View 1 (cartoon, helix red, strand yellow):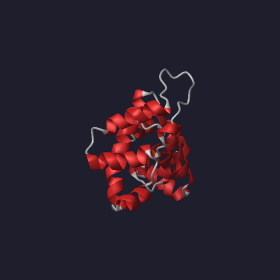
View 2: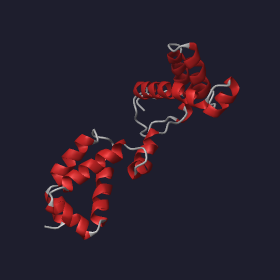
View 3: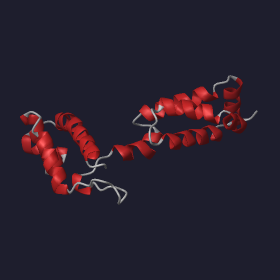
View 4: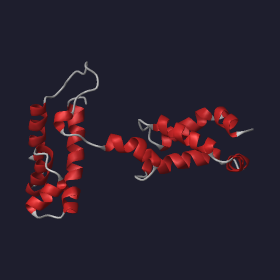
Length: 172
């Protein structure tokens, strides 16, 4: 049996395992296809060794896990990094036109402002400067004379939490 035959025969089982290890990520199908293509491009000796030792599924599943959880993997640069980037609230628009609720920039800005009130003064000030006033971490660092790393560690979790709430509230 060659690698192509093995993958064809065991596709459903491999697919199920990869979906489980990637926690059903939106790009799991792309990742699995990339891994299969990578495996098929390997030298025949390597493929035969995996087949003889019954390690094909192990190789695919462990590679999927590694690539899904790594921030330096080809998968991260090709797919995942794009989905992790955030955009300013003014640029948030639904893909489909028939979305039930769409917030205007002013509504979203007001909602973010009200949510920021629940944080302490330090966090609220830095997050407001970045999210609402569109200042970069470097600009905030220079203005408040605070280390950029501390600013990033303060703002990033708040920004991620707020953007998730906005996405849910306005069906983005």
